[in-house]
Length: 547
Image (cartoon, rainbow, N blue to C red):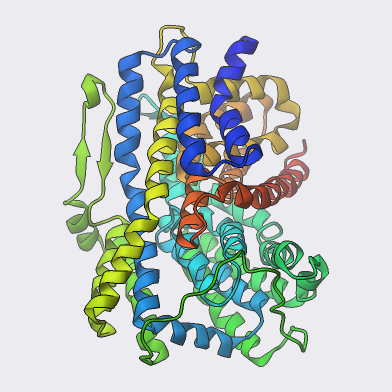
């Protein structure tokens, strides 16, 4: 690959970093510009077929429907709770557990968020958790940042194990043949058995890296957003934070060992909440004085709730309870899953190409969000003005998000589909990763998770990152004589870390906390954490694998 081709393959990353992070443009401006530059690089350097490029844009626009419905649903639910008055009750309930913002962040984002990740995945935890933090009085940008950081370790087993069970299997399959057939045969004969073995490597490493995430979250919270800008104020609850970390990672390890990668995040989070909430209520492992000393609240004034109606905790939480139940049941009850997916819409042969796209009309989490909101109108006996306001505010907040995702997802599709060209080059991500593999095989334990981050950053999903690069990671492991499962585990861990900073999740988190346009600020806070996560994991893998 020539230097010009290398630059062309890096166009999506360079463009996003330049316009979104360095020039601090809002995503609604940065992403359309980045898409244009990526398209130009694909046509003039990669010599991508223009019809295929146009079809990739259409594919991206259709694929964006799923995340857009999730984001809208999360915003809609937030506003339903806000304008019904139920959020006052929820806020009071968390305050009764602990008035300490550090504790609230850990319980909501690390534990409750991990449960949502295990059930639904695809950026849903941050879309639910971040606005809850805002309504507890935590600054919006801080809420988005810690919610994104929290949504990392549990991603290994997100959406009932999809990143490993589906993402890696698809990434390892070419021409209908799984390149890991020999490894699969050694581990029970099915890919599910091999996936469980890979996941054991991931969660074993996360007994260190994942356990440190809650402590990292609270240090970021106080160090960047506290009045005193003191990391020490966050680290002061190190005993509680490590306890909360282990309360999830140890049960998750055990569940994966005995049952496989479908439910470690769901059950690990439930066990974690059962252990951590009573400890928080009693004040064990915590300093005597709670911490809530934030700097300026990002210029955001919390709106007063429109009604003074009071609800029980169960009633106020009922939309989330129903939402969680629907997500879990729709994923594990096969007849229900089959019925819901029977309504899926698919588009094939886009613009005469083999590209296709689909939309899970009633199976996607967005549909459940909207259903729960409608139920909320009746559960909370909302008046017409409050209902109208919740709908209006939700719709208006979606405009910049539609622009951002309407450009970023097509950009990713152009990047992924660039293999359809007359230059004889592989697709941009494969060519780029091959170049890295050829020059960095001796330090691949550290490079491997960076490749995973890169995939998630652009595609917006750990599952898609694993689909893009699992084949490459397996081939590199073959070439350098490394442990295949360990290298694939590092791909998965990198994809998890990339979840913290991927454009799609950042746009979603910024939107639901009312900070659309300030995505660059969020990425600048989450990126160092993602890279640090990968560095620590890579070091453990290097020792483990004898690099």
